[in-house]
Length: 564
Image 1 (cartoon, rainbow, N blue to C red):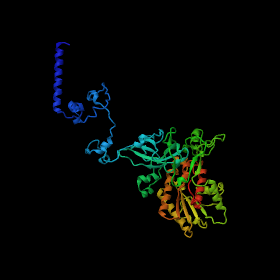
Image 2: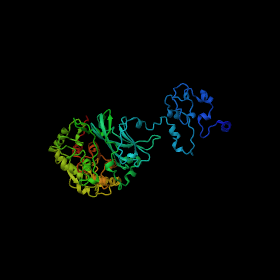
Image 3: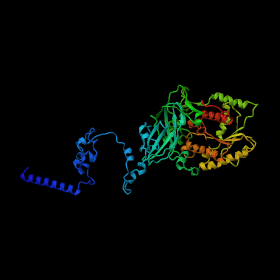
Image 4: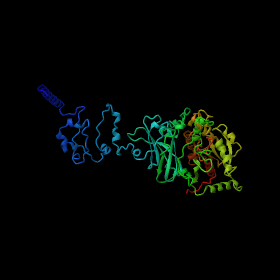
């Protein structure tokens, strides 16, 4: 370097020092918008424990800094980068006074309100969600991108789904089934969001079911993008408004992609048994002894398979239609040796007598000419007719019911149909046609309520002179997801049937008489809801137990029986 260059370099260095000094004087030691703590505070302030309370800083281990980082000069020397015990920020946040927020700032909506900060409990946004194992989701489901996480909460005995705040389907109608040592359908409920939790959390509860400890497979499907059924009552919080909601345009999610849980790695562990409560203690479906555990998947019928499979879609249709049902494909293998699917489960009564003993009692009542047997009338269409014409003969109870045809809730004609029948006990099942392609559009819950209520009231008029007359409103039968449902031309889905069943309960409550009784038989029929080969009725095994239970109930044979 020549003399001239050296002189220029020295002058430039002196100029830079002068400018830096001038800027520090103007800044006065305060924090500019982009200043760092090392620029703003003198070294003495960083070293004193009284002004900065850094006694911890001087006694704990150091985490080395990266000496080549772009902002290494902004970081205190390595002896100042230290670790301590985890800082419970929520506890501190709740113990100290609040500094008011500027309500006009650009991030004011991102800051929790004062009330949330003053809660006595720490704000635990998703502690369960983050500490329990995840159940893998099906990445190809129709709402896969809506789902943040699916998990099992063993403490609350539930399976939960967390949906995004901007989800296409923030309140979906879900149906979940556990299959393992026993079967159970999950009861869904929207959970109250914790402060700071974005999106929706819905949990399917199994705490009231009768389940043994062990490993269970879980499958959850989405039926509708928006739950307009019983789950909507919680959200609307107004039964009158719920009854008035229209249902004509409700179509199910694509049945080919409605499973939201993975087909593999979909197990959970129930560490202690649940004893069941209410009717769920009366009976359950348990796995037959000696059979290996394997998952149970929902059976469905794509619209393309509604009539019969063709050469182009035969394999797809066979996989969906004949899954886990009585047929030549999966119930038994071609040699007739291997039982698969729903027939792997048998019904276990929780009563202190066996099914055989209960049937013996019913047969004795039927054949005992020395006592008067109440006349039982089955009102409805095929669901009542099948019980009368097919199930009773199979159980050696022929003649126990009299079938009264009533396809619809028909208040104007039901009294005429019952004239001369002298019925004592009537069970009414008139909810299938109102939800079927025959109705098109289906009855809203309000229309169903009005018609069935008047239907029952007119039946009661025929019993005015019968002091023992009774009307029973059972849970509506479930049917599989058939092709017409996939085509949005039939609405006999679990969501709709559950809604009609809830209306039956409302009618019992509204009429407020001991002569009308709602009968919950979901513990029998729901776990096998998708089983019948004709897509519209109960699986025979389920209908047999339903018939036994309803008959014993109406004849008083369950009175005084203890549970095991």
